[in-house]
Image 1: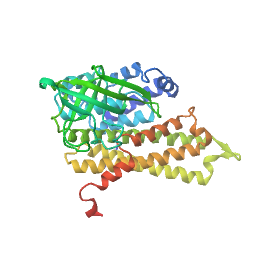
Image 2: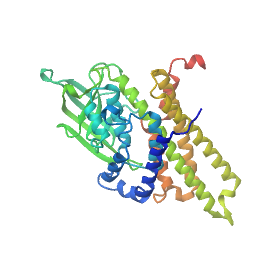
Image 3: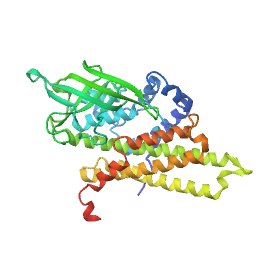
Image 4: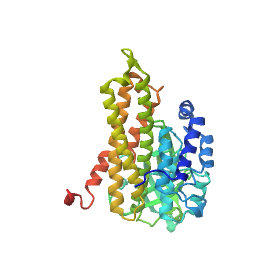
Length: 381
């Protein structure tokens, strides 16, 4: 089977890599991270100009109707370059709208770079269980839409988004998968209070308080009370993208570590000549290549019509990539010595980003439990 990118996919990846090398180097990124907003309007304009925002959007809304494999090439380069712009948050939000239908105008704005999105899904008590929802959406007086109340936490790029995709409970118990509705809520809607912060890896996240926020009927994403299937499918898509980003980050940190071993002198020779360190680099390479294979498989299967297959493959990929990211990151830090944990070295920032990717949309332990719970696992075992 051919696992090489086609010509168009490679062109997207090459264009991104050239831009990152020229205009989004490590020092530029540090300035953006420590700016007031934590993002760059110029960088967003360039991503739009390069077609990255249009890539996952359907052609009917001005996009290129890119597949998850197309996105794999893009996310790897963003991971390699430590890009902190709200690209992932926006394309994840767009996936909700694509799956649900009925919000074509918003998708056209995403493709044009005019709208940033964020997915407000997690809550303080829910950890990785996205069906554990206490935020409520009750019928507004006279049936004119819904009133949303509650708090969402760790909303990636929530403060930078023009609109939020919000999961809320309209019925059932707090942990039921039935009775969940999804809404698209503009960030400046009365009653929405957003508190922004910088995360460990230099990204931005927000706590979002909803107080009697009026969402009109047109804000509904999908069917009322039946949002779980869309939520699960969209976040599986997001998990596959994160696996691809992690592979790009591991590529970069592996290359940096190899270069360091070639140049760092000890006892009159490069430390890369020491057999024990060569063995550790070989182990890093094995973990990286296994993660790469699983990320590719997840990108192929994430849009499968077989939901059980999608769940099984995406969770397997998130587990293996998470394990590899931890191993590769830790080895890179140790092989760099004391420099490996300093802010002056990109390897430290890649390590932090890899740790955060593992915690986003379910960590390795969560997805291992999910994988085991899939039908047929015990019988096959």
